[in-house]
Structures are given as C-alpha cells and as structure tokens.
Image (tube, rainbow, N blue to C red; front, side, top):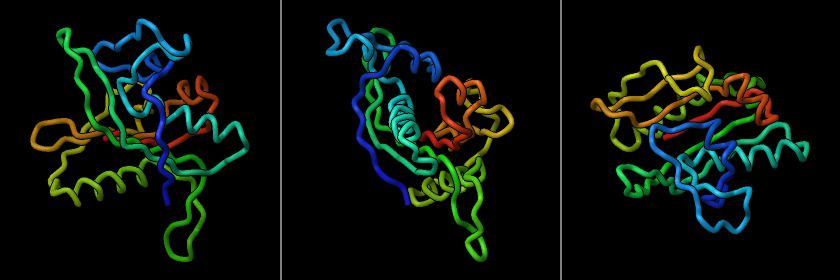
Length: 173
C-alpha cells in the first residue's frame, strides 16, 4: 500500500524550476527559512522532498501519496487547489505468483484510471504529456470532457539526477 505524507506548502526555488507550472509561483516575503521561500504550485514539489528524505536514508522501495493544497498566482489573485500526488520508488509485487517488478508508468496509469473511475470519470482521454519533469516516452496527460485532470509518468532522467532519486513513477491529479 501507499503511505500518506503531509508536507509543508513551502518549497525551494529549485523545485519550482524542476516542476514548472503555467502559473506564476508565489514568493513569500518573510519566510521562516530562506531556503523554503516559495509556495508550492504543485503538491508533487513537496512530495519529492519526502521521497528524497526516504531514499537518502537507505529506503530503496516505497510508495507515498499526499492530498494537499497547491498555490498559484493568476491575474494577481491566489488560486488554492486541492491536489493528489503519488510517487513510487523501487519494486512492487504483481501478477500471478506476485512477481517482483519495478514500478513503472503502466502501474501509475492503471492507478490513476482506477481512481478517476471511482469518482465517476470513466471516459478518460489519454494524450501526450508535455511536462518537462516527466520522461516524454513514458508519460501521459489525462483528459476528461476536454479538461486536464492529471498527468502520469516516470521522472525524466535529468530530473531524477537533479533530485538524486532513481527512476520513479509519478501520478499528479
């Protein structure tokens, strides 16, 4: 199963740049810690900090998720959205006989489609993801009635290297 994490909404500028958003990030005028001077524009930005923390402490396989608020500046107004993000690192048992396999894009896509179906969104259209933090050949954008409802994919190798994480499968809803 997945372990829920609850992270602060403050992230360093480096994570804002690694996981960009179409909207402007909100810089905090008087941050508690100068390193964490931005509000996250995506829940995944703080979730990867938890993944880094676990991986640096010799945890080589784990599944984390967070349901939290993201903050975006649109037309000088702050938009606060609830988002779900998940990250899987390492192996997972699946299939007949519980074969051990590395968690991949298809595992996360299946998870996303299952979650959306449970919320009445069954006719999901899958298109190419344009997210620069995700691998271009192992990622997709999920659309429902013409609106983007999520992105699924594997970290781009450059992103993995920048975060000092192994290849990891991600889900952003």
